[in-house]
Image (cartoon, rainbow, N blue to C red; front, side, top):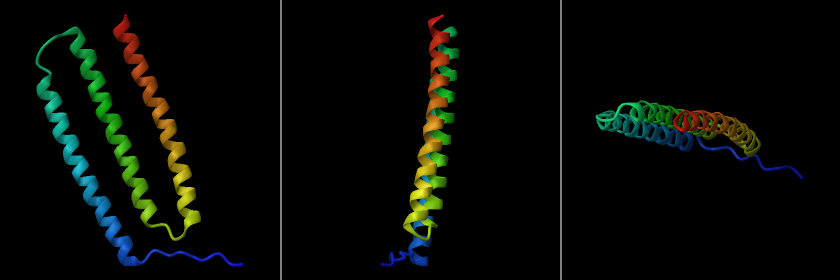
Length: 117
């Protein structure tokens, strides 16, 4: 028995790619606005503020990296030709994101130790 070969039509792939691009732009704009709002909020306090600012900046860095990784994954996914390729891509994405989240958790743990001191 032969497995059916599911191929995504070019129009559907183009539409999906445009949708990913539009979503990426929207998230980029949101991130820019959030960074501006955070910068405006940095008006008072000295010791705690420097650590808090570093945590906020790191959080935005992580959020941007995670968003970029997700959009890169989505773009690759809409270009896949069959389910096997899509599943392999999904597995690779999950592994890389798990590793990224572990590294990010270590960053926040270091900040928590700094605050505790």
